[in-house]
Length: 350
Image (cartoon, rainbow, N blue to C red):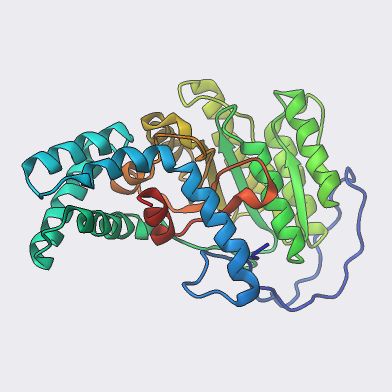
């Protein structure tokens, strides 16, 4: 499987404390290790990495087929005229691209067609892929681990979006690259969430801070404090799934953020939102609501396989351009990969 982390120099081993042990005194300051960069794949990959990445792209293309096929049929005609642009507008809106992004893409596409003097409708599809890639390019950003120790990552999302599973997959990738991870089971409202996170902790052989029926903010505080005391590279905080309309629960998320800052004044260093790619324009509403409450730094978009609503990423880029760190097209570990704007645009219209 292609690794999307830059390996850091090996660090001296640190003693491992029991998973539920209360945090000890803060360790002495040491020189910061080189950061791990969780980044989009480079344009040219080493031979060993090219094949797994190709397999991932094949899955992405298959997952976006429902979206892409409805758009691709627009370019089967014989001429470029108003009718083609009207059909394309309808197809983009049906793919949940949104009005603002659709208007932007159509205007950009017409400009490209005029400048390139394109007369073949089939060639227009390639120009549209370029326009989409340019629109999405600002969302392509690497996730850097190591500038802070620990790097505290707070993860939010509605129930069913794949939040806890995404945390487990990210934990595996981090652990595989040598980063020490501590999990915080701050989703204390749902017993199954703690159990699910504990399973991932066991699979990845990482520690977990959990407390049955405890206060989510208190669990988060304990985890960040423990992460600092034990010299962990990353603390991943799993928060309770909730709808943005559940205002009292959104206030709980704000409380977790405030309490985490008491444990580490610079934290949280990343605030990620996991959204279900099947939800279309509702995903955009979630991004707006959670960003207003938590100041999001990045997104993980899951379940892009089998959806006809893949265009919502374009809507996010136009209306709420929060970086997309990862996208997922299935339940397997390798189905979560870094986001690449050009790859996504090509897969969308393949």
